[in-house]
Amino acid sequence: GENVEQHPSTLSVQEGDSAVIKCTYSDSASNYFPWYKQELGKGPQLIIDIRSNVGEKKDQRIAVTLNKTAKHFSLHITETQPEDSAVYFCAASRDDYKLSFGAGTTVTVRA
Amino acid sequence: ETGVTQTPRHLVMGMTNKKSLKCEQHLGHNAMYWYKQSAKKPLELMFVYSLEERVENNSVPSRFSPECPNSSHLFLHLHTLQPEDSALYLCASSQAVGIFGSPLHFGNGTRLTVT
Image 1 (cartoon, rainbow over the protein chains, first blue to last red):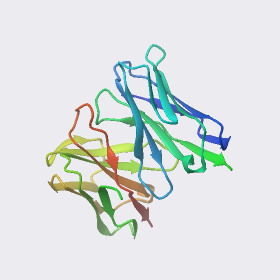
Image 2: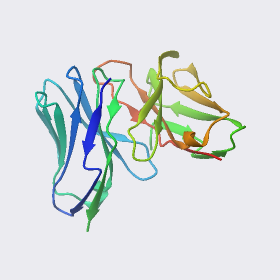
Image 3: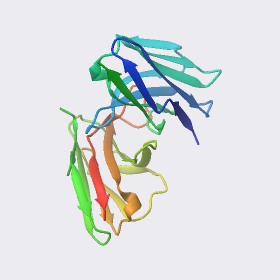
């Protein structure tokens, strides 16, 4: 089955700086790569996703890049704010429902 | 306000108890899921239902028994659990299974502690 590795496990950034989280996957047939944000006491919420026919996608301060050849994808958060502090999960799947998740990255934005 | 509601938020039970977790979605979705979230580990898919039919049972022990009476409600019946079953149990829904543009919407979870 699919194996997704996520790095780093924790990330501390100064407010206003950028944050980058990287994930690698093992199944070359995977074609859907979502990112979820989980705030304390809440369930994960989808923040952005990308499909294998696209190399990059942006939504305001967040962007995701995909390198299918190397089998890795990354989340970029620019101009970080305190409300960006959360746990972020990457995931991969061949279709939309059987997602394999990474172990998560705890992001702390220092004021 | 999440469109997926889980109750209870917290549950403490002994190993010999029987309890149930409840999930309700108000999004008009046709697929519902149970995930287990343990500290520092990836989310683990447990069960998937599509139009009340179970389509995935991911090698979950029989002490966990799901029930989906309709497309809006999902239950997880628990009996004779072990301490290692302590975790956050997340319910999710999606418009359909295996369809592009049908992302998961999660509830806020039930924090289960088995004593």
